[in-house]
Image (cartoon, rainbow, N blue to C red; front, top):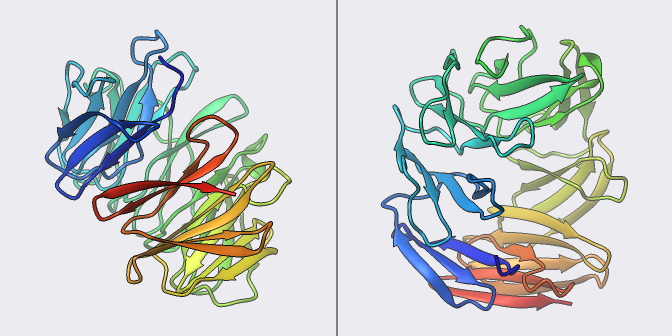
Length: 333
């Protein structure tokens, strides 16, 4: 309402804090479990007042700006959640749908009221689904996509009914995937990384597979999808050991940078004035920020991965870093 950014953070005793941009507490609340999803902002009442949506292993949570639960929340799940929820607004009308895979090998669909969506048949999978469900629209037709731990790909419609029967699979225990939506099934791809064989794999929704071999060993790499270069097409960001590297989806290396210690997380941020690679090492207790423009690396003590953002909306970028029970804000120049 005041037009300012706010910060939500959780400590290791499961207490969440809402802070204003200056770091002053607005409220704190113990929710009894660790958040395992992204934090989603939703406008439940369609009045431009946002609420906070996320899930823990046993429940979906929806809080208002004052830290109070909305009616129907927390919504207890029928089985333990395997991963973070996905929230979709198909028609851009704030009529939200919440998809969440659970340990009983079923994917559930909840309305924003916290109740299971009427008319949706829970999707039963052969093996557990441990990655969030994704949604695409191809040729005006909706499709929800999930992958189980053995690599089987499930596509289903808004009611949970099957769409495509894809024979191609991803690698088992796929760590992440990206849907590159095109104008038709043959131009729409599920992209994933086979780190053991240093491959980018692209499965078309027409059930054809393309393999792109990388020129270096990426075994054990954790993959993320981020806009890295200037062409507005999605790129692949990897970190393995103490290295961070980025490729376009054609397999061309965009950059590679090493850090002083083994990394647990990495990210990329760029705008008209800043381009930086940031990474976190748990064993070293440090965050590393490499400025691609100045070619300098800055190091900060940390116990968690950082956040880069225009915190004060003054066209300057800030690095938010947690170090034990201290949250610091550092201007990036």
